[in-house]
Image 1 (cartoon, rainbow, N blue to C red):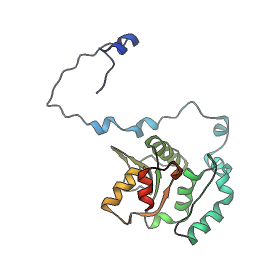
Image 2 (spheres, rainbow, N blue to C red; image 1 turned 45 degrees about the vertical axis):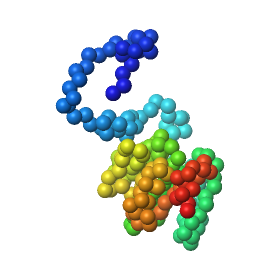
Image 3 (cartoon, rainbow, N blue to C red; image 1 turned 45 degrees about the horizontal axis):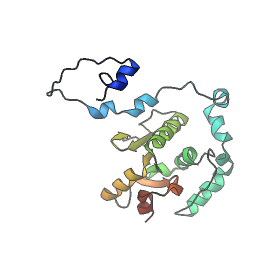
Image 4 (cartoon, helix red, strand yellow; image 1 turned 120 degrees about the horizontal axis):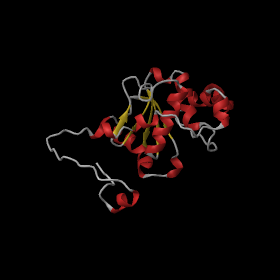
Amino acid sequence: KFELGGIKLGNILGIKCHDQKNDQSEDIDYKKSQKFAEHMQDKTDTISDFTRKRTIDEQRKFLPIYAIRDNLLKIINENNIIICVGETGSGKTTQMTQYLHESGYTKSGMIGCTQPYCVVAMSVAKRVSEEMQCKLGNEVGYTIRFEDCTSEKTIIKYMTDGILLRETLTNPDLNRYSAVIMDETHECSLNTDILFG
């Protein structure tokens, strides 16, 4: 575990060095200490006035994607592959997975949504779990490198594109998923290019 105590930066910041006994026989659960989900359960004080005054349902209906929800679902039902383009903040990432769930897509498998960055996968999963009023890691979860915050109950899973690519090694057809959303594909990564192939 990295500590600032005992190094120059720690001394400048006034952090004291703690005595540690180096007991090599002690098992350390590194995965437990890497649980970002527990840290994300806390509410932040940086909530906007709009968010404070409206319910989550009202906030969802205020997003631009809500106006085309029915047309979007019709297009998704009629096509195997679609490309959805919209402005930042229009609700593509958080709402499309929920629309697919509400339309019954989770009866035959999970809905997966790839993100280019770990932090985005975690924060979006947190927001969607709040909107669906469930605990993060149950119905809505995320998987990033070295951390799997999902369960047998998970129906919407956010993950990095590298995680989905790794899943194709053991399950090339991705049968666990009824739908896969590849988000932020304009950021062009090798993983995304291979997944498209």
